[in-house]
Image (cartoon, rainbow, N blue to C red; front, side, top):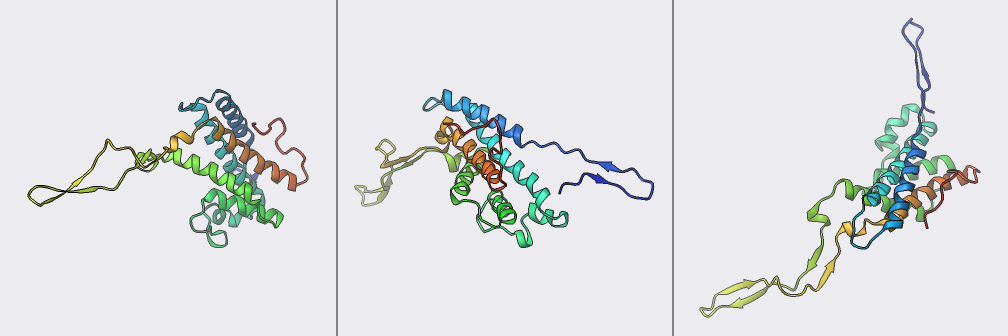
Length: 215
């Protein structure tokens, strides 16, 4: 459990820790922004509320993992969990958040987190990561063009010809087009459902009173 008091018998000062949970604050902010984004969503228009909703949703699940782990995992093993080392080593290619989320459910309830919840939170984390580490070269719009043509000149030499005016064979929309009110609401809903599922397994009917799924 979290350290609440530290003291020595050598005459030095003791320290008392007063904990402040941020899970509910992050969830409330995510709900407000995602609801606003869903209500005011316009096709082709990027809204700050969509981004804020996604960010706070993932911050909420990270805070949930960190707070639960301090109550669940022995202090001497906590660093191993935080950095996913030794027995907590994550599956190759899996995000740290998803690995930790699965671990705390398995430790606490001796059962895996539902696959649909894992998949939904995973998608939310991917959206957050792409926003935080945005790369134009990787996340821009892609036009799949016809193959380069080889043209034979009068002197018999060959030239490669690229026609940028030809219609693309396929267009893959940019990542940013996926950042909208619907996505923000989906990210919030996935995190809320996961935290509520934890409560359900603990026998709590409503683990986050006052907040509900955004429809």
